[in-house]
Image (cartoon, rainbow, N blue to C red):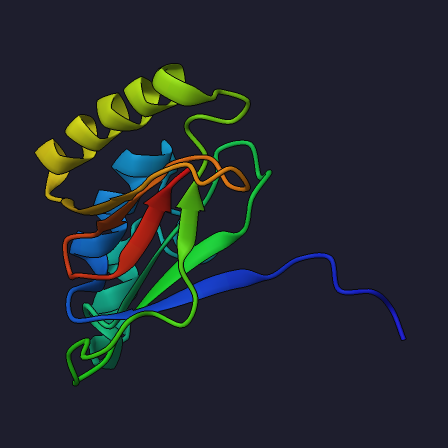
Length: 143
C-alpha cells in the first residue's frame, strides 16, 4: 500500500468564502485556480448553481503545506474544536522575545477579525502560545 503524501484540512463553517479570505490573509495563502474549462470561480458556480457559496479553499503559493478546505454546514459551532491549526510565528524564540512576536501577530490578526482568547504562559516544559479564534469562533494557536 503506498504512503499517503498529500492531504487537506476541512473546516466546517457558515460562510466558506469569508472564512477562506480571512485564512488567506493569516497565512499568506491564495485561493486555488478554478477547475479546468472555467475561467473563474464565478463561471464554475454559474454552471453548478447547487454549489454557490457552499465551499472555498486556500492553498500555499509554494505548495508546501496542506490545502485548507472550508465547507458550509447548517449548524453553528457549539464546542471546542477537536482539531485546530497552530500558526508558527515564534519558532525558536523564548521568553519576552517570544511574547513580543506573539503579541505583534495577535494585533495583526485581531485587525483582520480574529479574537484573542487566552495566553498560555511558558510552564518550564512548553513555551508560551496564544489561543485565538477566527472570524467564526474556531480556535487556533499562535505558536
